[in-house]
Image 1 (cartoon, rainbow, N blue to C red):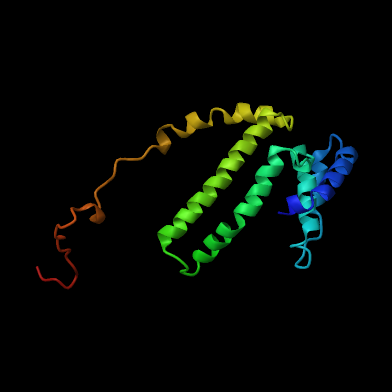
Image 2 (image 1 turned 180 degrees about the horizontal axis):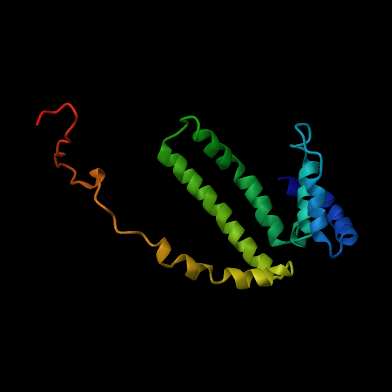
Length: 179
């Protein structure tokens, strides 16, 4: 939401950072990590504008309100806040049926996952950062590696829970039972 509210500040800071830290983008992130964050400023839109301005050095779409990156995160910020709060509270207090809460979580997480996948694709395809092409080369074999044998499901072994639904369990001998 702060991305939407403070886009002008984000754009101005991004322009300054892009000029001051040209070729040294990681220093912007380190500068951000060294900021004084405390209880009095953690909810400040200016602090969160600093997050976006720092990240915009890596991906300028967050300093441009005409880009997909800007709108996917603004959209997620406004549309996922209520389901996320409901989901977090619902895990602690019974505010609705567990299945209903699960559906809310599933839909919310799917939206966030989908937006993240599309954003990542946009980031890599547009060559937003020099290492992104190397990342594609490294990540491309992952689907094949994840489908290999070590991750396949093993043959189930019989347990007490795998008996037929109406079978009677066999008695287990105890120390007190007589032979």
